[in-house]
Image 1: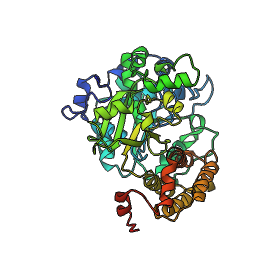
Image 2 (image 1 turned 60 degrees about the vertical axis):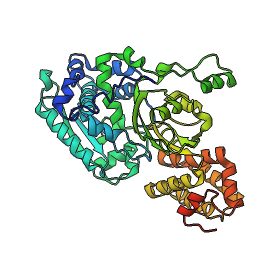
Image 3 (image 1 turned 120 degrees about the vertical axis):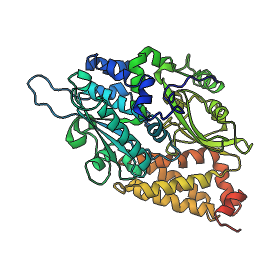
Image 4 (image 1 turned 90 degrees about the horizontal axis):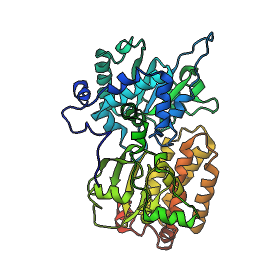
Length: 456
């Protein structure tokens, strides 16, 4: 598989986080070009590129910018803000941190372009509090950009001014939800807000606010330089055995247009692969291709189950190796592309054990604001502990599915929905393995049973 890096083209060069090295490889050329364009034309360009948010939901970035209301003549001008969601907390996800450590200026350049396009004069970069190394690296990069005249008053003589503030977050998973992030940024406990109103009109300090993922903004300078058509051509071949089968089974005449979910993507691979890490590939690359890039399976075993976009996306099985990993095809496979974080498990791994660990995470990270998520994740853990110890029953499976039905779509934010994904999908795909847990008196995998301290 031949790949030309875009987002990672500076990775591995001499100190790529330094502004001098960044500028040698087209650094801030996109900003210079954007500042010569009308702000609305920059929004139109990003919208036409079909760039979709890399934070999980895949919402079109240009459309989000377009939602920001602009004052009419004679109306009072409210401040506008750009907020960067770099609170990378999804289990299995490790994309924004390597990007901020290796190439922080690409994100900063994208931030300044976003501020110009949306008429914002202040941006905040919200980084997970435990990631002190990234906070220090980005803070230093912001200072470099300010000293070079890319941040501040009258940027590059354009008349446009912009400030950038780096903020260390509260270290809670819930702050990855954009409205909880805004509450945390304002100094309050991070809890999701009721929507509407939406951040586009009533965001940070009750002012119009764009909230974008770090990876989304890092893509913007390349779009400004290369153009929308160039960006839309960066797609993988989505004609695979799985897609052909799906088209036939669903009576479709053709597949979704590949440029509906285009561009380069940094996929995070962890688990049972020889070389876990970050791999840049076009959107729509399959897991089969990514495993080849990572050197194959680490223990020589066949793949059993995997997540395409972090633990909050429904898991898939070996039957889905050829699903194109973009926002459209992943949905047709019954899952989500999410954060492009692939956690890979082989045939000796226990799906019940893995789901227990994820459920423990969601129980711990629930903010407690709504009953379905707060109570449902608590009951998940109790039932999974019984199953792993051999004390579960058939009735427990029905209870898990009933709990999922009462959490999904009834929680205040997407954390509750995400918590149901591994539970519902694992029972759907591996019900027989659940049955073995109570039929055989505990986990049927010896290595997992020993790790759990179960002797019988």
